[in-house]
Structure formats: structure tokens, C-alpha cells
Image (cartoon, rainbow, N blue to C red; front, side, top):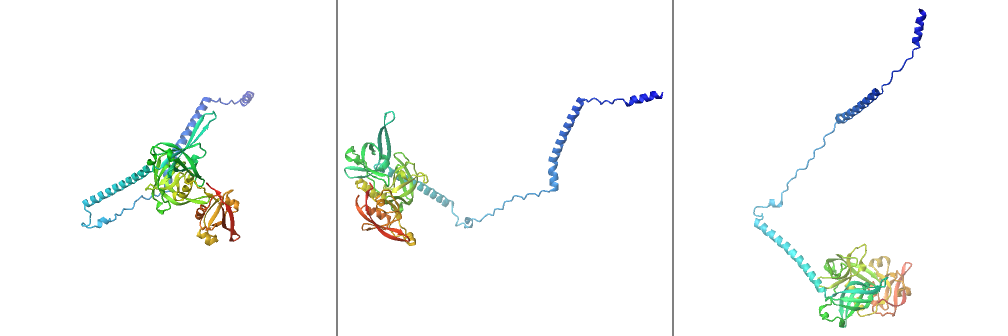
Length: 432
């Protein structure tokens, strides 16, 4: 009996314990439920934070109310008319009368303005009798041996009539390296012209048309303009007209005024003044500046165009050009020394002991001055027996000589700290 019990106990002890089988469907369901509950908890936490955070923050750190925006009260001032007595107060009819007077003054000013422009346009129309169109015509052939004609145009000014020829001032670049020069007058007729002289300093030239070739009563239709005095200070800020080709095309015009007159172009043996205007032209502007009296004040050339000043119209002062135009028209040769320079200022004379004269800033290559030994920095004090105390006297003195003349030129040259005199015999060349 005891043995049976021990046997059963032994069998009980040797019994194998088996794990409960895993229910995959239940496991997946519980996992999804747990994830869903986690998301719900996170959303509730986020919403609670955003709703409670301002309240808690304001309780911990109470925010002060911003100051109110207030504008200062406007204090009404007592106007002068409020201090007037009843007798001093203007009556309505007086106010109306004053208003009418103001309107009349405005109308008068507008009328004056219109009258000014009408006058300026009349000056322009009258000047057309003195203006011509100059064409430089070149004949050539292309790569395929086909003949073609090239034509350059500019505006010209009739400056003189000696009974045999009409002399016309024009930019020289238009007639350089051309086969023929053609001139179209105010009546539309065109005739050929010939070159008289060119001035390398100003890039201007004088051409001539025989009077006998004009015909059809042209002489009665043209006019010789008056060359004005551009040295006057009254030229500054005065109304002027740009005629010819100020906009790059024939018979164009611009109204404006002179803005500066104290400008200098340093040229060989002479300095030319030019003035600026407030008129805006083109890069190929050309023509002439005229005052309200129809007088020529300046000559516009393309050499004044640069990037710094843009297309503002500038012109050579006609007063400085008169002598050059006269010499070219008369086919006179201009003697040539070949120096550029300026006047010696009072300050330079007093502070640096530079003697008065024509101070040489530059010597042109292969010029008579260079060949004679004159140098930049020298001060020319005399030519022959003529004393030179300003650079302008240099040009007027040279005009008294002829090409190939030998002249004695005295200069002062800096030697150490002192200027010493030196003399040179110079054979003048030909400028034009």
C-alpha cells in the first residue's frame, strides 16, 4: 500500500509543466489598444499645457498693463486776423478783388513765358538762313566689288562772304578723308565746297563755296550771323538756344541757359575757354549756342562729350575762336611752338617765388619747343622783344610771326631753389 503511494508521488513529481499557448490575435489587439491610449494621453497633455500655460504664467509672473496711447491736446493759437478790429477786417469784395488780381498776375506770367518761347523760336527761324548741312561723301567698293557711298553729316555756319566765296565753319571730322564735300543751304539746294583750313586744336575747319555756284538768288536768302561777346559775365544764367544738331539730327533745337563760363581747355600754344549749359544733347551733338538777340555765343563740338559729364552740352567761347576763324578763312598759316601751359598765379609767385609768365606744363613731341630745349616747368617770360606775363600773351605774340621764323625765347628755369634765366633760338613750325 505504502509502495503504491510512493509510486504515485514519484510520478507526480516527474510530471512536465507545459506553457500556455500564445494567442497572437489577443496580443496584437492589446498592443494597438496600448498605443492608442498613449496617443490620447499625449494629445490631452498637449492641449492641457497650451490652455493652462498662460494662466499659470500670468499667475506666477503677472503682466503689467501697457501704457495708454495719448496725443497731446492741440492748443489753438490766436491768428493775426482774429486780433483785427471790425474796421480792419477785409470786406468780401476786397478779398474777391485780391483773388482776381492774383489770377491776372498768373495769367500775365504764363503769357510772358509763352512770349519768351515764341521769341526764342523766332530767333531759331531767323538763324536758319545762316545754317547749312555739310556732308562728307566717300565712294568705295565692298568685298564683292559693289560700289557704295558713305556720307557723314554735320551742321555748318556761314561766317563770312567776301564776294567770291561763302565761308562755312564746321567740325573737321566730317570732312576728313572724303572724296567730296557737299553743302545744303536753307533753300534745299546742294553744291560742292572745298577745304580752306583745319585747326587741330579745336577740331574745327573752314570750307568755302564759290558764290558763282550758288545761283537761284541764294545770296538774298542767306544771312551772315553776328558773332557775340561771350566774355561778358551777363552770359552766365542767361537763356540760350542750341541750334544745328544738338540732338544729333539736322534742324533740331534745345532751349536752356548757361550754367558756367569759367572753364578752360588747354591746347597747343593757346587756351580756349568754354561754357556749360543745362541742356542735354547726345554723344554726337554739334551746332551752335545763340542768345536771344540771334548772336552766336559758342560752338558745340563732339570732343566735349565724356562719361563724367554725360551729354550736357558745352561749347567753345566764340570770343576766343574769332581770331582762329578769321585766320582760317583768310588761309593764313598759324605758327607753331608746341607748348601747353597756364598763367602763374599770385600765390605761386609769392609763396614759391615762381616768376610771372607763361608756365609750361607740357611739351609736345617733336615740336619746335622740344627741339630747341624748352622743358616742362619752364616759365616763358619773353618772345623776341615782347614781354610775356600771362599765357594768353603767348598766342597773341606768336601770331605776329610767320612760319619758319627764328625767334629768341627767354625762359626762367628752376635751378635748386632759384629760377635762372635762359634763352633759346626757336624755329617756328606750321600749325595749320
